[in-house]
Image (cartoon, rainbow, N blue to C red; front, side, top):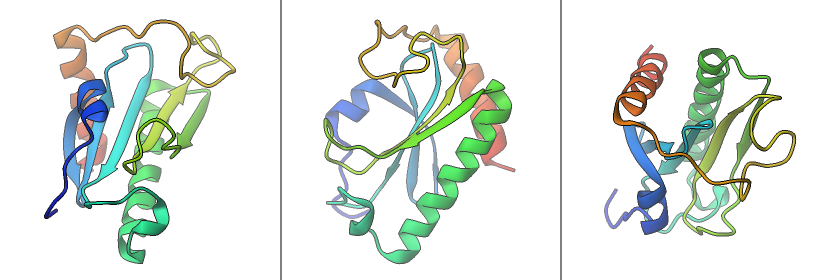
Length: 136
């Protein structure tokens, strides 16, 4: 983790849930979606190929664990998993539970409507659910 600094935009738009295998699992600050952002704590990583093979595998495996956990917890119609990096270069993976009646369906969620901040208790409850399936 030496030299790792979380991108300021990711820090502002998310809150940490827990660290798993050197990956910061973060909850996006938009209560309309069950939306996680996974950030490997590796300095300078911008692309999957910047990671050592073992780190890539751990990030992929964690992405799958998060997708399965969110799919169940949110009763999702579809799971979206993406690592775009066009706005924030630091490597991060979005794991988003989608519903056919959500604000953006069927389009991508980025730039659709205004995000809705969590009420503190709602964020705490969602974080507890996420920690529960990640600790299994």
